[in-house]
Image (cartoon, rainbow, N blue to C red):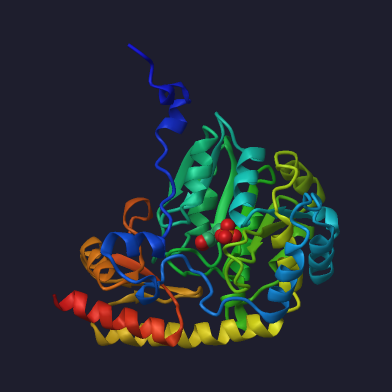
Length: 369
Ligand SMILES: Cc1ncc(COP(=O)(O)O)c(C=O)c1O
């Protein structure tokens, strides 16, 4: 009998369940016979405001150059990030989305016989990236939906080389204060790379927005990751980065593809750093949207996890059923059962006021049906 080629991959790859992204609008339109324009997608924590004016102009300018390979070193973007953070350019690693950077960290520091520690309800990429390297997952029970950093530090064993902390966390929207992060860093052995994933940093209230990048100077095992996919509105272009001690950054860059960030993304991200008014507006509108969704959920008698991100995770009861009922009404949200272990919740991205309204009406009807 012919061998199934899939059987040739290592058992830890065969047992992977691929990442489940939010359902694309075009797919739902095909399945339900709906007009794409009538569908609201609040499933992938994108920015409903689009992009800023400088970013748009930079994208248009960069299109003329796409016959050429990008600058593999991303000089201009690194220079701007380096100036913003007061860190050497050698401390910055660019990625095809911050997801790429997380995968690079896993490639550089994990492998069979090694382990990484993470929280229950953490971002799905951490267990996937760990398992794909044949490394062991140490999942630590959450405390009130948030990372229990003390327990995570205690769970580190001799084989642990990476600790993942999303701050704020997706899908719970919980946040650890700077003091807690610092206490964690003090507890963790220097051998363990601590990834503080700050994809939602720009949505934090200003008094909570800590200068975590500065901690890299005191903690050479710290890797801070950020992205242009959320508040900067560039999810479709894929660009994110890590800031780390130069020697750690060097280790990560060894496993990077030579041109992992495309030229349009590089130009857009560099310009986006000058579109800070756009980011400030995105922040302010997100706060209003969170309030709108929270009040709507409360009116419907649904609890929610207070969020520091651009999404709200709402307890709706039979979440899979409600998710499907919402789809029929042209509203895509994100179920967070399965690996996220929140089978009664749905995660809803903050949209425009009109999109949030549409979701709340669809949720009202779906809960009543
Ligand atoms: C916590 C967290 N980290 C990282 C990412 C990856 O985002 P990107 O690859 O678009 O930068 C996401 C995306 O949803 C996220 O929620």
